[in-house]
Length: 265
Image 1: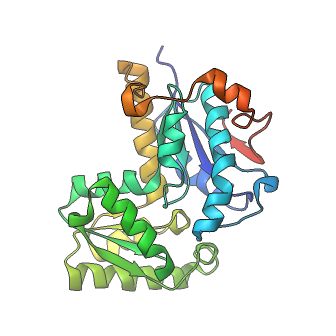
Image 2 (image 1 turned 135 degrees about the vertical axis):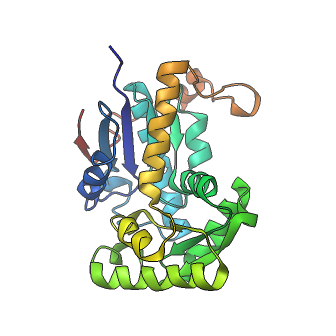
């Protein structure tokens, strides 16, 4: 009997307002047998409902790393960081043990470039662009990116008025496709969830939802662990901190790293 995959999708905020939204979307697209758990941080880690600012992101990263450690110890195959900044991705991968860590930006870029030669990224606010463009450049996709297209919405505003959000996303998508020749689009915020299907039907190009992209890449990576034994390397630059040292420091583990936890296990 094939062992089911266990995937954790983690919102790196101390607020559970959108956990169910993500769980419903991911359950609708999982492979048969995949178990999904959606978590968010304790409010004591900072009761943020978004991390648009670098300073907010810095404040939640330590709690997210403890969440990664907890998930790895529970035997999850993969952990998804639920922010398009790919918050703490390289840090999380360093201490995830045999568990794969995936994030939305890198997953969406990988998928977009497998479907097209040029993609645009639709973001909420201009504030985000510098940090996101740095991330895309680090991953090696800058020459494939037609640009970033801001729609004037903050993270928490995407889910308030769906008709208005769709209108703004559609306008931005048309600019990217018709003016800058984008052949695919990436939604540059995890809370742009729920819009990609309508957009791609109207625009005629693939529209990549980053949460779904990261989840499906994590699911695939988990299957490679299960079926091929391909776990993260711990050699040279992928070396993990010594377990004894982390234990002595006493800051990497938590009795309960999650403020909210819903899903299959």
